Image 1 (cartoon, rainbow, N blue to C red):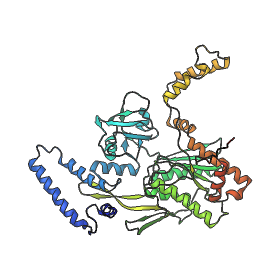
Image 2 (image 1 turned 90 degrees about the vertical axis):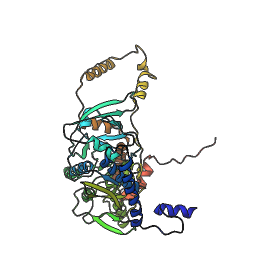
Image 3 (image 1 turned 135 degrees about the vertical axis):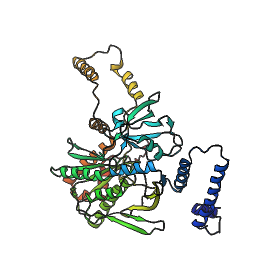
Image 4 (image 1 turned 180 degrees about the vertical axis):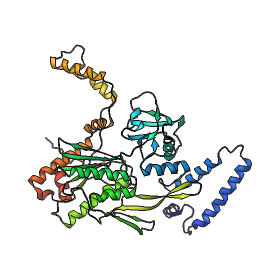
Length: 483
């Protein structure tokens, strides 16, 4: 039984102890069957409404069946994909959940692009789009859904979203516009003298943005850098290599690709001298939405830091640590190959190995695990406000200072000016426990570097010292004391 299952998993068309049927022979046999069905449909079907759309879906079904990342791009989708990777396209400006399955009845919005159409319209992270222009998303592929959201500039798309703690569906009419490529967002956390960079996609422009920030940050001394790759679903491989070049020595291996037989196809290494201060620690934030090119960069920087610790234990350069939760685990490479009728086939052709590290299906494990916690729901906030506190009671006694504070809050409510994205981002970071975890670790590491530098002189030693001194999400060893 085990032998039969293995044979079926390998080819899908053979039985135990039989030779696999050659691809060409199988393709010929079933292509003939497909052609027969086409002729029957033409002859017998009551009314074929759109043969071209049916053919596109049939080819896409074949490629999608091979693996989750292969697909067929119709002319419209292919053109939009080229526009998006080149840096400018017309859409509504959202980051979507890359784990969505075709059978899902909604499209989860992970984040909105700063100052984009959705951001301005009031769409929020974790909203779920269930309908686009009157068409439900059930049974619709992710690429088909995202294509419907894109279109000509200044045209409107009508969506309905499901929002947590909201009883009804919320309708939005969003005007498509140019999605400017603001792929990074950066702050100086002045209270701790730490720089923070958030990167949501790997594109040509993202490289320029991060390089510019790194150059600015070298003008003054600071404790460390936090690189936020959470919710980053990837992008261009060349961009990941160029960003790695900003941190690693020239000629450092970034990633290798291997074919289905495990044979190495290509090696990608850095081609420029770094501009980042490699004596300062880098803490990289990751989560289950960190995928593809983002995993290449994270795993590459981590493994180079590990190798340096082994080669020269006293070298205090390139201290790289990962904080958050396990990454997505997409180690496959897709090639977009143009075909006839202005279409393209997106086909998985190989696997990539960041600095020769296997991440396919496994992802990158953080050095310091920290689950993301979110602010209380509206229901919980309401309950806390109205129960269990003195101020929840009717006619409770207010001091003069409390009365002044109440007046200030009332005045603030009267101001209905929209909050700028950058201010909203600051507010979100204030309640970001994973960010605070990274800040605490940088501060602790800075203390150790001053008091006992030998104990944190490389990545390996630093992890041991930090874990011994910092309460992480690792399982606690708890023993009962019998009294």
